[in-house]
Structure formats: structure tokens, C-alpha cells
Length: 340
Image 1 (cartoon, one colour):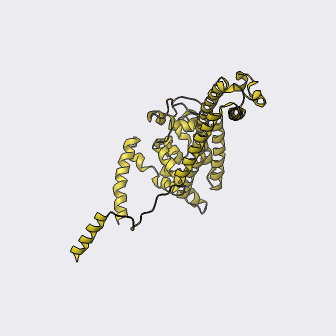
Image 2 (cartoon, helix red, strand yellow; image 1 turned 90 degrees about the horizontal axis):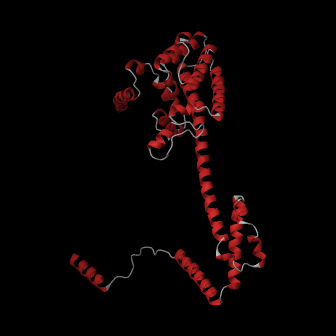
Image 3 (cartoon, helix red, strand yellow; image 1 turned 180 degrees about the horizontal axis):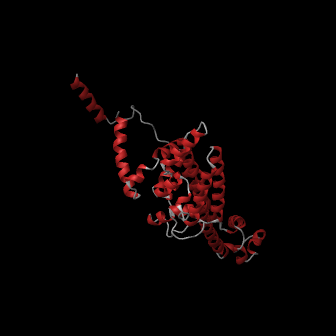
């Protein structure tokens, strides 16, 4: 009973919020199959459900949101480099990889529709309108040329299809089609299934592919920063006084010019730095004065031993038999005496 009361209360509040946020009229709200969206999300992984909720409510970490949150300085698309990356652009991006994923998604959806005994005319209309919406951002074909569920969806707004809000006419149309041909399938399951297919095949691959570009740019930025740090270290070592009195077997490290060294790959440059530091240590063992060398070794030994002592130090566990002062012991005796 309490669940029915809470559902009725929050249904009214959610309806008012959605109608105000997305500018939906009462007739449009009643014509949306909300139960189909609910069923499709119930059969999906919780991670994808969270992503869908963010996508529908425009809370994804997309370019415009990242700039608004002061996380990025620019809001361009990481794939096609177009300005103002919005949630709509995620589906309309014309990058070659995005187009390849879109064509693959259409093939998968077409195969699923065929397996669900969908009328061929409805398959052609759905796939054609999805392609038209991606290319132009709107539907330019006259509405009178389509079947009744498609016309009802166009009156509602084709942008709602991208968010899993299908018209109730789809379930009724498919159920009538199945009943006429005595096919043991459900129109409600067909509606929730097509919503799931669009979310998992049209939008989710686009999002993961877009994130690959974002993280690739971050990795390249980190690698360039490490490269700059390594080049500055090489310049400091090459031009420092540490190269004086270098041993004969290590003179080859200085035979290459600095410009040639800086052109080496990262792995070879790091290997040169390691060899140079080893050569400096061997040079110091021979040419440093004995007192300076001994003080250096003593300092290193003290540091290493102190670190070992600190690492082995253990906190003594609490003991009820720890030592107490005579005054505290006498006060405890008197308190017990008064209690008796």
C-alpha cells in the first residue's frame, strides 16, 4: 500500500519536473511509453543505467559541461575538433570512426528488427529516419508518407527517440501485427527491446570511442611533459661539472653532441641518463678525497639505518598492566575503600 502511495506522489512530481524541463505538453507526456523505458533500463547493467540517466538529463562530462565546470578551457569535440561539443553532437559527429560505428549499429539494429518479425516497411522507415536525423539534425521527409506509429512519433518529436521516449502507438501497432499473424511475441517487449538496442548500439559505442580520443590526448600530454623534463635533465648533466675527470671507459657518453642526444627516443635517452649517473659515481670513488668520500658514505649509511629503524618501529599495544604512578595507585585504593 505504501509503495502505491509513494509512486502516485512521486509520479506527479516527476511529471511536473519533466514537463517543465523539456517543454512537454500534457498530451505529449501521456503519449510517451514510459514503461518501455523503465523495462529497458531494468534489463541493463547499472553502469549503463547511470550513463543513460546522465545522457538523458544532459549531465555527461561533455565539452560544454566540462568548460562550465572549469575542467577544460575549450569545448571542442575531441574527434572532429568541432566547437561546442554537446550531447546532440555526440550522435551527429561526422568523424570517420563515428560514421563506421553508426553503420555497424544500423546493421545490428536491422538484424534485430528482422529477428523480431518486424514489418519490412517499418524497418525501412526507422532506419531511414535515424540516418536522416543524424545527417541533418531534423526530419525533412513529409510526415504523411509514413506509417501511423511513425507519424505519432514525429508529432511527439523525433528527438525523443534518441532519449528512449517512444510513442505508445509502437506497442499497439506491433501487438496488432503479431495478433493478425498469430506470432507469439509481445508489442511491449518489442518497444523496450528497440530502446535497449538504440542505447547499447547507437549511443554507447559513440561514447566509448569519444572517450578513447580524450584519454589518448591526455596520455600524449603526459608523455610530452615527461619528455621535456628528461631533456632538461640531460642538458643539466651534459653541461655540468660532473663530466670533468670522467673515466676513460665512460668517455663515449660525451662523444655525442647534445643536439644528437636530444633527438634520441625516450628509452635511449633514459638509458643515457642512467649510464651517466653510474659513471659519475665510479668517478667519485676514485677522485674524491678520502675524508669527503668517508663522510658521504657515513651520511648514506646513517640515512639508510635510520629508515630501517623507523620501518621496524612498532606501536606497543594497549596493556591494562602498564606502569602507573604511586599517587594514582593510592587514589585508586582510597576510592575502592570508600565504595566498600
